[in-house]
Image (cartoon, rainbow, N blue to C red):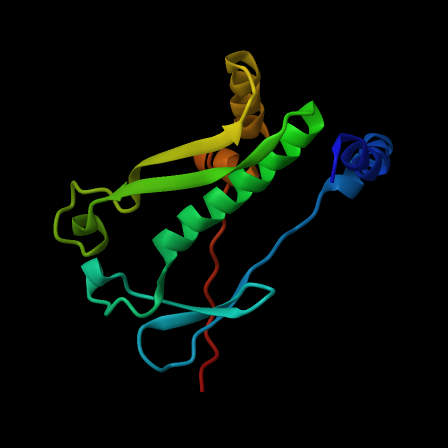
Length: 171
């Protein structure tokens, strides 16, 4: 897809959202199944089912996906797609490259070994290594706009409101 195709595809959506802001509000969802067989959870991705389980640092055997890894994978996927869309919009050629996310965890927190150890990532680093002839100024704009428009990046940077419910079918 080139710049003109992207703009042509997005223009009617942008017009619709300007005229009817409520139409831009979409609820995304993810579903998973707890099957009672071990400490795992089957997540439907839309293309396949991914079985998530314990990370080896918490007692897993490494054969199941780790939800922390999945979070980082969602970040690199979103950041990569956003970067591509922004580059296309700006008319910048990105011939290829890599997107990498690293996150630091202290597993003492999630295992309740140390109350002062946080549960969750302490730090996340997102990096891009691009094959492009873009200037330093263009790269700075690309980085700034990718950060601004990446849904997962922004959700991690400024956490949304959370609501958690739990119900049980007794029986």
